[in-house]
Amino acid sequence: MKLITAIIKPFKLDEVRESLSALGVQGMTVTEVKGYGRQKGHTEIYRGAEYAVSFLPKLKIEVAVKSEMLEAVIDAITSKAKTGQIGDGKIFVTPLEQVVRIRTGETDGDAL
Amino acid sequence: MPSKPHALAGSLLGLLALLATPAFAQTPAPSLNSGDTAWLLTSSALVLLMTIPGLGLFYSGMVRKKNVLATLAQSFGATALVSVLWMVMSYSLAFKANSNPSLNQFIGDFSYLFLQPMKVDSLSGTISESVFMLFQMTFAIITPALIAGAFADRMKFSAFLWFIGLWLIFVYCPIAHMVWGGGLLFTMGALDYAGGSVVHLNAGTAALVTCLVLGKRIGYGRENMSPHNLVLSVIGASLLWVGWFGFNAGSAVTAGFNAGMAALATQIATAAAALSWMFAEWAIAKKPSVLGMISGAVAGLVAITPASGFVDPVGALIIGITAGVVCYVAAVWMKKALGYDDSLDAWGIHGVGGALGAILTGAFASSAINPAGKGWLNDGNIGQMLIQLYDVGITFLYCAVGTFIILKLVDMIIGLRVSPEVEVEGLDINLHGETVHD
Image (cartoon, chains in turn blue, purple):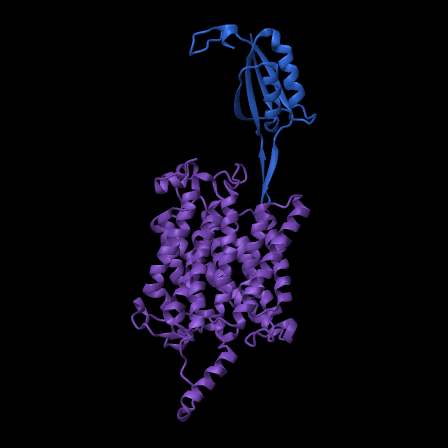
């Protein structure tokens, strides 16, 4: 099992969610986050006073999937979240040791 | 404040009096005009609206979130404190003639202490004196409240109350008396229709002195001090714009042709200044900011204040365009170049805009609009420019010295500035025991 953590542009969420649903992904967690990568930040100007805003708003998606689905999910996120502009985000993949569904006590593949 | 009786209404009244009492064909004693009184009642409410909530929202949207309630408390506190002081003595000091002619050049007297001589049917021109007193009270309220923009985020609330109370009595009252109450500048013929020097240059100068005496905010120039919610500021600026019709058109003290022209000039200059600040910023900083548009509008309102009621629509347009650009330069470039922390640009907009408006009034005043004001360009009266410059100079000097002395006095007795710990943590929680929650 793998945990996929993707940072994406906020306006791409719906397309990503739809394509993951179509693949059979049963759930995801979304968090509003701020951060920076190569896009850096931007500058705000108030009556001539300039402030560098280093952290830009992004969305963090977390999806847990069976290992055999990994490539398809990465492809789906990559194709749907891509604009070609700097700041599209990143995908992090980490191995997942255990999953438990709290209601039933099911574990691992059954719990996903 | 000029109070021209409506010529047509006056002659009609005279005719009616003649028909009704042919045996006593004399000039009728001035009597209450219900139209004028109704307009001044409305104007009083409009000018109060400028301070609460208008100015309160305009300023509190521009500060950081930790100081939003403290900023609102300054507008609200000023409203309450000045209202009471105005009733107790300040109206008398500003508007009543002093029996000593040399003192009368500078200040009124205490004859109207607690408004004792005022009767229910006392008249001021064609309106009831209670309404005139109330209308003038709303001007006295907004003037010290405006100063707060310069020392946002760092003055003690107790020091604020002492400062504006003393400032009202020792700075506002003399200047109002000199210009409107029959004093020095009034006698000299200075034109100030609704308070370009009495209200705006006066408040702006006090703002400059205050921010110099208090010093910069901790972290100024290094930390992000961007406005926490500009929506509040847009609502505030819009309420200022609407309320300003009472400020300028109400200053006709009648509901006639003068009030109409003053209202029209106000709208034209404000719109022109909003555009000119916006385009100046668009050209220089590459984006037309919302804060820039509303700042320009306020600059236009300030600059047309002394001129409204004296200038024609084209004069108003030129004053507005000039004010937007000049105040943009003052608030953005001059502040940075000279390095003072006029936090919300009370000097840059009200001081500079007020002085500019006072001087341009001398240029654009037209006797075709108001026989009381003969200007340079329309009437060839270049001497008016000198009188206006003198008016600006006296107001600036008197206000700067008076403000400095009051600040030093308050600083000696209770201290002006909050501790660094309080300043960093925020005034809301430390001074008022409250915070704004999400």
